[in-house]
Amino acid sequence: MSDDEENQSKLMRKAKENPFVPVGITGCIGIVAYQLMKMRNRGDTKMSVHLIHMRVAAQGFVVGAMTMGVIYSMYRDFYLHPKEDKKDK
Image (cartoon, rainbow, N blue to C red; front, side):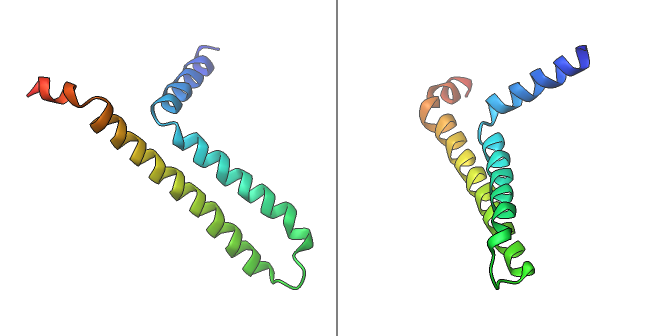
């Protein structure tokens, strides 16, 4: 029981430190699930083309989430708390 609680608390701590990582993972899983359901009605499109589009959409979402996380981190470090860095020097 304690290992599960430690893993859950570690996951929650990491999610609070980097909130865009769970968003990226959730978005990737959501896009893949949507595209797999959409695969039934793909019409004349080849399977490989459909899978390539699915991969590009999922990767695009994850890269966008990572970019937003980096921008948020830079904003937090340089604009919200700039005085803390000057005190240390």
